[in-house]
Length: 382
Ligand SMILES: Cc1cc2nc3c(=O)[nH]c(=O)nc-3n(C[C@H](O)[C@H](O)[C@H](O)COP(=O)(O)OP(=O)(O)OC[C@H]3O[C@@H](n4cnc5c(N)ncnc54)[C@H](O)[C@@H]3O)c2cc1C
View (cartoon, rainbow, N blue to C red):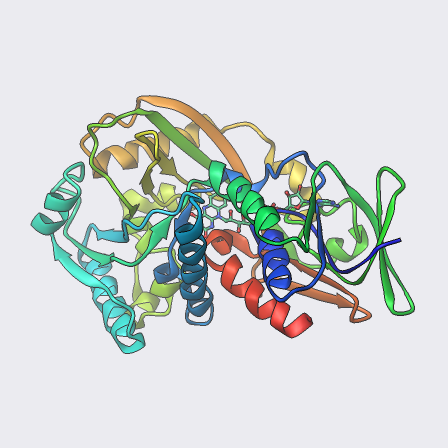
């Protein structure tokens, strides 16, 4: 039986980039996915690649991740577009935070530009001047189309590397170590062996090591997303992040004035549902609007349900209408996405006998940081 150097379980963005970096090093890699194609967080997300939103430690993974996306995009179209990211401040507190972030980004040598109301509106005419007080723009940031990216990336990997074997439709149900060999068993009773196994199983905690996940402290977040009808006339290129995002993202939390930030009354109900307003124009001309956050412990995920809470959608749309001119109520579709996270760790890393390595719960930053994080992770493990 052929022995692999590495088996990766789970072909979301985190697992696929682990497999990519190992294959790049010449390792013989088998990437196993339980579904016929990935259909979890990696395809349901916003597709904003925003190092500017990351805390200091993970910022570097976002910057490196962007370089990796750009390198692959230069070879083949994986849906990466370079239209930058802008954070729109709507009041004096948010303005203070964007000024502090600008100072911090200058010390890191990461390009950012402060924009006045009129400069913002010239560039993104869909924004309302009543909302937009000032903006901070990161011109080098990129976005992806989540419904395209992972499929194209997997195609790229299998055609670029002869040592990259991808097998979808293969749930792994057992993973063990015997001596110096790791074994992986699938639902079809087939066993594969490798020197090491990396498990990037996202929020699927029932098939492998369920007791371990039960006591891991992982929390699952449910997000609601909305997508408008196709609106080619709306000019909104890039990642558009707004005041509630400034009040939420880690990069701003690390700014000096964050500690004394108060929540104005009109934002209290939105904050209660973890809402911050993001806009992204998809390739087809529709506008994706998000998102909200509800939480449950990893062993109580069912509590979150799978449907849409219409009250949350209405709260998001009312706030969105305060920000933009176009009619946000022309909604074509909506969906829920889920990701695991850990409230005290940036990612969950569990090692079993130095052969099986669980890497999951990268939280809401996986599209931005997985490519960069996985590069360092493979360098450490292999
Ligand atoms: C609505 C939403 C918006 C988001 N927006 C952004 C954003 O704009 N920018 C950003 O940086 N991040 C964003 N994120 C976060 C990002 O999507 C996630 O961090 C990332 O996709 C996680 O990737 P993953 O590979 O860990 O997990 P997943 O995508 O869940 O992949 C795990 C894979 O493992 C497979 N699997 C599990 N168990 C097994 C098994 N036993 N055998 C075989 N296969 C298995 C699953 O089928 C799945 O395909 C968002 C997330 C959501 C939900």
